[in-house]
Image (cartoon, rainbow, N blue to C red):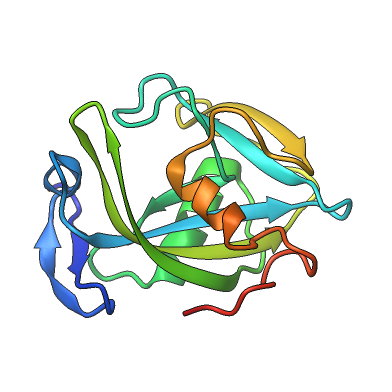
Length: 168
C-alpha cells in the first residue's frame, strides 16, 4: 500500500493524509516536506541533480536530499530515513528553518511546508535511481529547484552557515 503524506494548514496543523500523486497534481494540497543540505568542512554544499525519471523537476539541481514526511513520521525522522536511503550516511541533522511555498511544474507542482535541515559530511554515496550527479560548491547557481532557491535566499548558507535565520 502506498505511504500517505501528511496534509497540513499554514500553521503546520495536521489535516489528514493523501497520496503523493494527489499532493502534487494540479495546484496540489499543502503537505509536509523537508530539504537536507549537507555541507563539508570547507563550507561547500553537496548539490544533487534530480534523476531524469523524476515526475517533477527532472534533471534540476537540488539540495542533497529532499522528500516528504509520511504518515507516522516527524520531519526529522523522515529526513534521517531518506538521507540514509539516498546518500548512505547517518549524519546529525540540525533543523534551521521552515517555510511554506508553492511552485508549478508543467501543470502540476508543489504545495508544501518545507523544513530545512543541515548536516556535516565529507563523503556521500548517491543512490543512482534517485540522484543523477553530485556537485560540491560554495556558490550554488544554475537550474535549481524552487525550494532550494528559497532556502538559500533565507540564509541556509549565510554568514554563520546554516542556521543564520531563526526558524519561524
